Image (cartoon, rainbow, N blue to C red; front, side, top):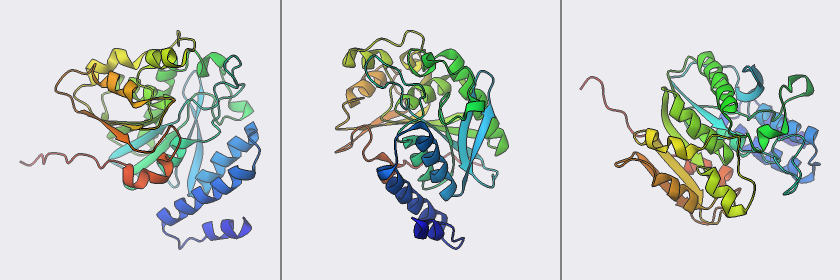
Length: 297
């Protein structure tokens, strides 16, 4: 591991190589590291740092939200914001977790492997936070109220800060799992979102709770309600053919609620499930943005 760290510190390595090696190192560490809270925080911090990214704590009102982004910050036209999944919300069907920091920060891995453009990672409330940063960390915010209006408001304020720091004019929102619901709700209320991407995204929480026979998310907003308003927004929804947590049929049902014609499409990826193999394949799966019309014409 010391040899790997020395290699990662080599400034002559191209950024894509450093990021790939960082992901390999993080995978090796996670294979032998305990799954405790500090280990989960450390893994994400190391993964970001090895790729030359920094951790940022953003005061967004109700919550302090954690983001990861390249350092130093550079000005960009369009910023891709990757929104983390629900994380470790439950220890069992009846016992909620004390802290929702994910065991596997998939959205962070996706952000680090975006092949082009500028990307940042934004965690959900109370994920990756240190004790002094924990504010309003009631368990409801990673269980029944995980998609609540105050959560979406707080995430939007954090995005405002990230966008302003890089001078971006537009946004691409990329949400993994439950982060797909947050990204969809954000896209419906913001006027600067140019494209929406979900990866194994929860687009229909009510159908999801019925499928798994779990308690409905009574305190949450529902992405289904905003579907018609997003019909003209360019969007790609990626689903794994072997995903039993969020089957592709749930995304298909959500797309049927869009007005026609719509600018949305569903891509079902063979052999992928809810976790495998999104991060590893992201450099080739990431959809290139549609060409923009030439304003001079």
